[in-house]
Every structure is written in C-alpha cells, then in structure tokens.
Image (cartoon, rainbow, N blue to C red; front, side):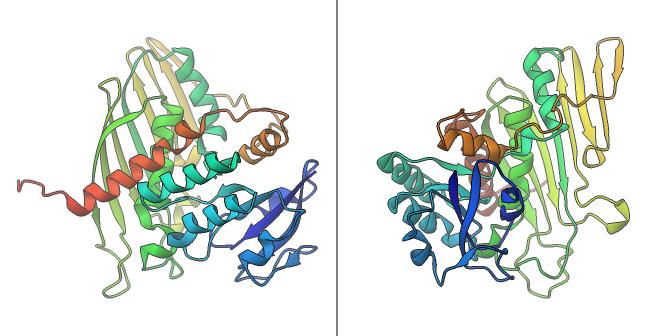
Length: 320
C-alpha cells in the first residue's frame, strides 16, 4: 500500500481519489487552507511531512504555484515520488531542475496530466492513432472557463490563463491529435477583467505549427457563462486527410466523419472502472504497470505553454 501525503489545496488535490483506494492511502497533509481530510495527520509544514517514513508519494497543489518546483525538488531529495498540479513549473529552467532531481533520486515525477485519458478524449486519441481520419492537418481547440472573484490576479499564485487553462488545450493537440508542437506563438489580453488594474489575463490566442507541418489554433478564456450549463465550454476538432473527429460543449456532443460516411457519435471505449491517470501512476510506483506516455511526452505540452507565454510577453507583432 502506497502512503500518500498531500501538500496544499490550491488546485485539484487528490483526497477524493484516495477514498477507498485499494493500493494507496492518505497519511498526512500540510499547507491546506480548507479543513484537512478526515483521518489524515496534519503537519505544520512540508518539511515535517517529508520526515514521515510512511509517505512514498507527495501530491503537490502548492499554495503559491511559483514555489511548486522548489517544493517538488525538496520532496524528491527527501526520497518521495511526486505528483504535481499544473503548471508543475513556471519556467523551463525550473522544470529541467525538477527532472534532474528526479533522475538523481531515481524517483518518479509526474504532472497531473490525464486530460487525454478521460472520455471522450481517450476514444478520440484511439481513433486518431488508428489512422481512421488519415494524417492530421489541422487542430482547433477551445477552452473556456467562468470568471469568479476567487481567480488570482497574480499569475504567480496559479500560473495564469495560459499555463493553467491553455495547457489543457495543448495536451489535446499533442496527446489526442498525436502531433508534437514544433513552433508556437501567442497573444493575451486583460480586456474584460472586472478588477481595476488586475493582472489576470482574460483571453489568449495560440497559434502553432506541428511537427508534420500541420497547424493548430487555440483559444482560451475566462468568459464562459453559467447559462452554458457546463464548467468548461470546450471544443476539440481534429481534421485529417480522410475525415475529422470532434467533441463539443464540454464532451456532451461528439462526431466522427470519415470520407462519405457520417459515423455519428463517438462511443466511449473507456469501460466502467477503467484506471484513472492517478491509478496508473500508483501502479507504476508499485512496479505493477507503466504510464501510458513517457515523462518527456507528458511534459511536452507544458514546455509548449511556457514558450507560448514567453512569446506573448516578448513578441513584437507587425501592425496590420
């Protein structure tokens, strides 16, 4: 049984995934702003938690995301595997330092990067990989979440729009459409931010060239309205030389078209009780299985997001 420690609740912490888990159990927590989960030992600090010999894995949702890479290195140096909320690092230098620490320690470091391994994206990933829609030529992604007053104006707190929302879209490009991003550029705007002088970016456009010469276009924003009925107003369309596959309205509608045939709804292939990304990580740590993608492939969308963020800050576009 794998002992798990949770540090921070700034993000999608995994206490609910541990309830009744047959291979992992919650041991201790630290850095929580809300009430700690029942049955967990409450530690005064991350350092105190790292001294617990029962803990083999630390799940990081650090209170300040800009500090999370340093927390990951501390965990790895203390002999703990790490599962980290996105963005797991806020610069490529920090990311490389974390990976170097994991390599030195001989431990597993993974980001909470299971976007493509949940339906309907898992089935779309399988369709693309099978070659049914031919060679991928163009990918269109929309990621839209609601604005609320709890969204940090300081991007250091959670990574900001490009790194904590746009990264999902980049995962859909690389992990579902199956093409690596070779070149990337981006624009951001704070237009529509209701906080006067706030630093929160409300919308971003990303353009990318894929490794096979194809193209990807992405929009991300905090403009979804509650009347939509879904937290995420999300769309993915993958266009190939033989057909296209799409998911719309947060996965409520899907469609596959191949040549002259409208194949209709994409039926989920992920059966009841199929392992989650976290389950796969636990099996990998316990030596009972392997992750579905390499660490390099898992973190490639983050690298693209970090480069897009840099491009948005430094590019000098020509006036129209």
